[in-house]
Image (cartoon, rainbow, N blue to C red; front, side, top):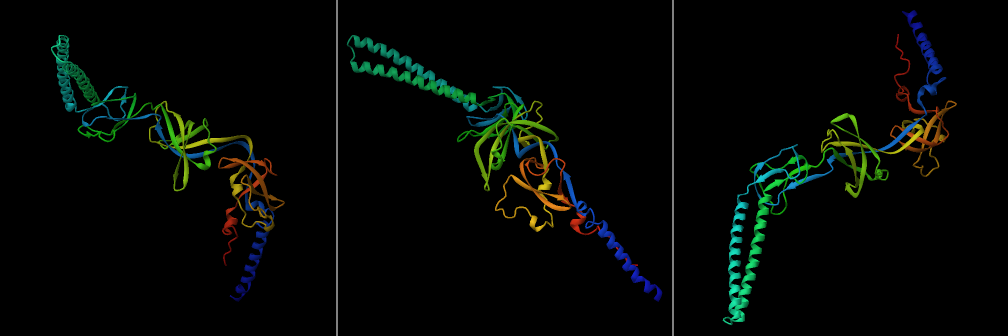
Length: 387
C-alpha cells in the first residue's frame, strides 16, 4: 500500500503537465489559435436589392354600398352572399302597400284638381263673354281669371306629389347600381329598415374582383423611398408558398398617427385574373426600392460583430463624436492580430450590405462570429479523472 501511494501523486502531476503542454501547443492559444477561435467569411460579388416591408389589406378597387331611400319592411331577397349581379338587377323588395296607397291617393287628388281646372276655365270664358256685354264688372272677371290660374297651379302641385309617390314606390324595389359580386348582405326577410336620418346599407357589391388593390401602411422612415410605378411582391397566409406581384399606384398624402407613430397609406394595384385573392386578406408587402448589379457584398453579421477582447488602442470610433450613418466597421485577422477596417456602405437587403469604398476586396476574409467553445470557455478542454 505504501508503494502504490508513493507513485500515485507523481503520476498525476505528469499527466497534468502533458495535458497543459498539448493545450498550449495545439489549442486556441497556440499556433493557428486565432483562426480556430473566429468564424470567417469571404467577401463576394453579386446582385443586391433593397426593399421596404409592411402589412396591408386586400380590397376591391370599387366597393359600392347599396342602401335605400325609403323606410319599410324587407319582403323579398333575390340575392345572397357571393352572388353575381348585373346593373339594374333586383336585389330586394320592400313592402310596398303604403307606397301604392299613396300613389292611389295622389292620382285621385290629381283627377279632382283637373276637374276643378276644367270648371274654372269654363267660368273664365263665360266671365269674359259677360264682361264684353258689360253684364259683370272688371273685378268679377279678374276673380274668374285668378281662379283658373289657381286651378292650374293645383294641378301642377298634385302632379308633383304623384311623381314623388311613384318614385317612392319604385324605391321600394332595391336594384344594383353596378355589375359585380355581392360581398356583404346586412338585411334579412322581415327586417325593418329606417331611412329617416341616414341611408342604411343593405348590400356591398365589389364591382370587379379581377382587379384589386392593397391598402398598406408604411412608416414615415420608408415612405421617402417609395415611388409610383415601383414593382411590389407580396404573400398571403392562404397561399404561403406562392408569390404575388403588383405595382405602386398611389401614395396618399393623408398621414395616420397612432401612439406617435406616423404611417402613410400606399395603394398597390393587383391583378387577380383567377380571383384567388379575396377581399380582407392580409398581404405581407415588399417593395424593391433600390438594386445594385455586381456589388461587393459584406455580410451584415460581420458589421454587427464586436470582439470580446478587442485591443484597447484599436477600438473603432475613438476620437470621433459621431460616426457617419453610411459607414461601418468589420474585423479581420492580419498577421494573427485583430484589426478593424472601416468601410463606406450602400444599400442593404437585411443579409448583406453593399460596400462602396474600403480597404477590402472580393475574397478577403472578415470575422462574423466567435466559436462557441471560446465564448463559453468550457466544454473544449481536456477532462481529467482521478485514478
